[in-house]
Length: 191
Length: 198
Image 1 (spheres, each protein chain N blue to C red):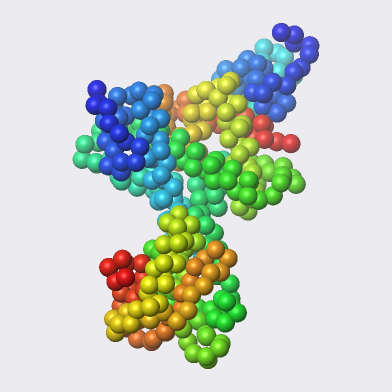
Image 2: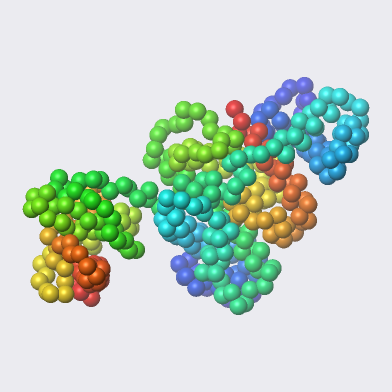
């Protein structure tokens, strides 16, 4: 059992120790640290890549992981916990940014943005992200595991195998869940 | 619960009701799991000869397998605009009605440096613009104070400050522009934000 410690703004948080304890409240306490790391790393990468190139989510999460965890003590089991946590953190980062942007920008969308678009401008991305977030919350009511798969695959950028490890199901189940979740979300967001 | 009265609960998926989906889900699984060449017979099998049900399941399976562009890439890619710190509030072409920005000549963690034309005195100057998000989070007063201190200093190793200002929330200050390798070095030890030099 980890000794109680103040971790809110401690950069060298013993993330692994906390994750091993597996307690829900420790995950909640870790989230801000992961969130902050992802936000900082993502902003920096985007500044560097201005004018081309895409962002690799897996790259982001691995970098956050290296920053937060002493690599030498890491076992696979812990890594998958971290990935799960980072996926949730990434969801928070994107939704928070989207809400902030919408609050600042226009009063309401003129058209409904759907998941079938190929490219979206910043305002449309914000709008779609907020709608999508609500739809995932609703999906979680009916199909909780599908919503978790969306977090890992979509927000965390995890592979089918990594997602399977996190959720303790087979890769085949992840594949099926992901297909169904995409279909259900697309329906939920269709006009 | 009445089947004849369709209701729209908060967890439905468009026209597909949540309860209905939970009934169909295992049937969709069975079809998704079947090898391609067996799909048709599995569809017939799970729908128990009900043609309408067969159509419904088939449509759902098709939708499971079609591309969904905004979900098929990780969120950080498809929604990358949301991660940009501060869309780098494009620098206006003209600052303070006097300095015409020509090009960026350098950037650091805190600021960008531009070559500009000082129209009043017909000379080239370097304009250093503090990143707006930094100015906001670290406090404008701190930067303004440092600029003020730097502007009073006279020392051969310190680049003098000609002028300073504020453009749409971005603070800037103006320094002599010098060609050659010493510029970077002099900017570095100049009226940067190092408290040591202040």
